[in-house]
Amino acid sequence: MLSNIEEVRARKTPVILLITDNAPGAESVADDIIYMPKVHPILQPIVSTIPLQLFAYYVGVARGLNVDQPRNLAKSVTVV
Image (tube, rainbow, N blue to C red; front, side, top):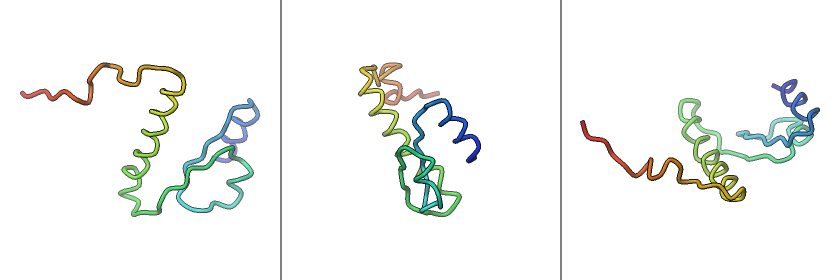
């Protein structure tokens, strides 16, 4: 994982880490760090999804993109 991060940094790309605890050396390889609570490994994907969805939403808004695309996707329910 660290070699992949170093490869990204070599291309002058910002690195944002999503970690559950203080990983040694994380500050030296990341531009920004999002800390998450440590939970049971089965629940970790659920806990990770929330900050990633919020991050994607705010990046889209900051870039001036339509974040409701396709329109009303989450608001519709299909009954079979």
